[in-house]
Image (cartoon, rainbow, N blue to C red; front, side, top):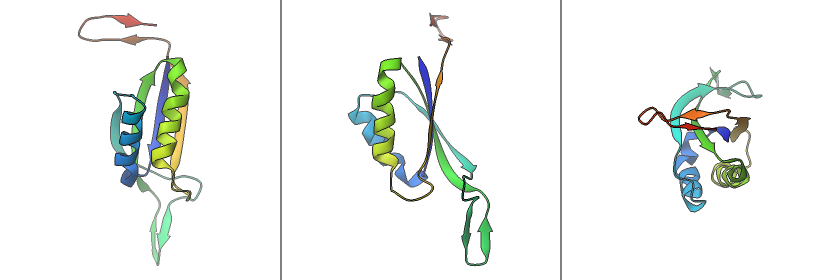
Length: 105
């Protein structure tokens, strides 16, 4: 299993959700976060915003689903401008269902 974490622009939430639906990816967790990338925030006139709003998505999928999920997130999130976000993929050793106690490896 793999864990996919994506940081995207909040305004692209609907497009990413739609792309994941089209790829038949049902479950994910999302939350609003603040952060900054290489550009170290943004400057609008004299105001400097060192952290900007992002939306964080978290999915755990089978290994063979990773390319499909990454492609769906990129499809919905890409604008072609700096700040589109990042996708991180990492291994998941095991997962436990709290209600049933079932273990997945």
